[in-house]
Length: 263
Image (cartoon, rainbow, N blue to C red; front, top):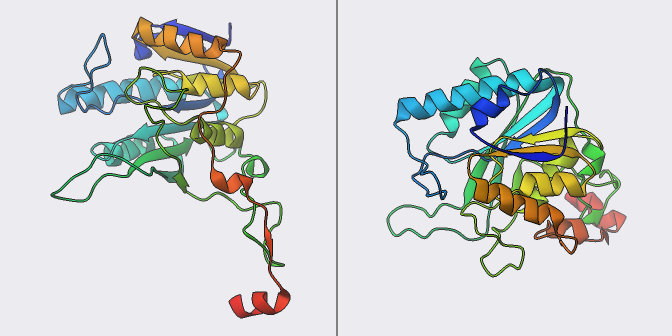
């Protein structure tokens, strides 16, 4: 099967053409059904239509995923609980419910302002790839009880949105930070593995997979987004648009008497 390429078309129809058990990792940000304008289509369906659409692409995703593969799905609050149940009903194995906390967002005066999105992490079986050593976060202090290789990053991740002033920002309404996708790909795939994004959008999943020496397939119904993604892949001067600031820290020395007080 040809790898590392973009495909313009309906996600479900293209997925049907991919071989069984051919994909190592699916990482995708599907439409949230919130009425966003994606150029040649508007993200708005009746509830039952959106459920049916979601079931169709998830069913095909399970078929193409390898037995040791994983799937990460971004989703907004209005549908995430139903998505969780659908993944379980299809026989996926639940691993984690990740909260992506961003530092700015839409303001509200009646109710609390949204500052997060959810990422559901499921696997096809209990035997799956997970490279904890590749995603550890440096410790804040030297302490005997800590694993000084670094800490598990946990399931609350803080990455800023890609601000419109960021030079790496492209003309897409839901561009995701590359560092966020980088953590997913490092944790749940190995070099040369095949990564799939059925709703490629701005191309971030494929860009990061390419930088991390993975093969990739990106699907989108909008040819303009396919071109945008292709241009990002070809950019030889590309620089990471985001990072977790904790990755840059150097652990501070914590004297034994101080450490004993913290136990």
